[in-house]
Image (cartoon, rainbow, N blue to C red; front, side, top):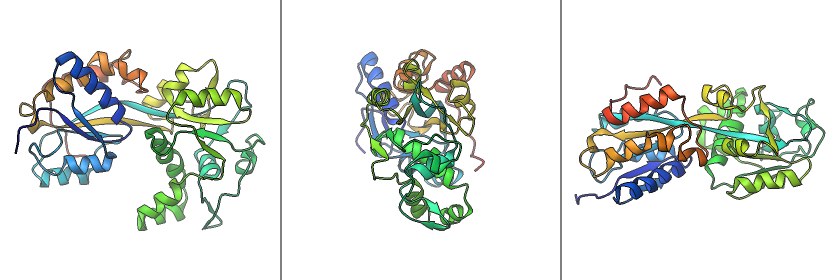
Amino acid sequence: QAARDQVWAVGSSTVYPFTTRVAESYARKSGAKAPRVESLGTGGGIKLFCSGVGLGTPDIANASRPMKRSEFDECRRNGVRDIVEIKIGYDGIVVAAPKDAPAFDLRLDHLYFALAKEPLRFRQFGPNPYTTWRQVGRTLPNQRITVYGPPPTSGARDAFVELGLEAAAKRYPTMTALREADEDRFKRLAGTIREDGAWIDAGENDNAIVGTLTRTPGALGVFGFAFLEQNGDKVRGLTIDGVEPTVENVTSGRYPLSRSLYIYVKKAHVGVVPGLREFIAEYASDAATGRGGYLRQRGLIPLPADQHEANKVKARDLPAMARPAA
């Protein structure tokens, strides 16, 4: 195989903008070629990462969930033995209302019934009939369902669908059975957002959603946690299942629309692929993933200080991860 002169990372669309930003910073500081970063989804990225060792395979898998035991075993079968797991931070999605709007206490299933294209009703799937929040939950305001959110190309949209709609659908036995029988059909039915005007794709710019909310009485918005922090004077995050979207609740995992983000590194490539060790060190640095790091501006919620410090040691020593429990 021809020698490779740049780091190669693949995987999660949510982690993609973070890795791309670290790649830019690394290239600027080192003068080396910027790493190649591809957005294939977490599962697709890990599959390619686990396909073998050598310069024709990626060095890093970006992931918006932990690696599964089955994926780890697949890596092993293909000779990928020493894998380093680095948790880079957290991702939180908020449902927000203008500061002066009536109080909402949303549950995950409210989101599913309000926004799924064909929700499960009376054990059947059909077009979404709900037009107001009161029809979805008796305790909710009697106002029209209008939600501005990210488009299908966005990682935030994927996170909202997975952590909100799909997680709510799994609470129903019919949906759990469907998921076990046919996961693709489950994802299509649970995770397809309605297209009749109740949900409005507001582009990739979360600031535009904030602006629209403040001008549209009765509307709600869905966006990344960072924008709630930046616009706390204009909008407020609604509680989900009784839990407020705060840094503490996101990092502890109590807030339902939150998740941990990871990179997985192929240790066999360190010392072979130029710049891989230095790139990982940049990722774990205070400048990138620390409390005031540049990934904070991109929407990453940083790890607690002790975990961040442990990551810097991991990036230096590159310990191999244990086989996942599930």
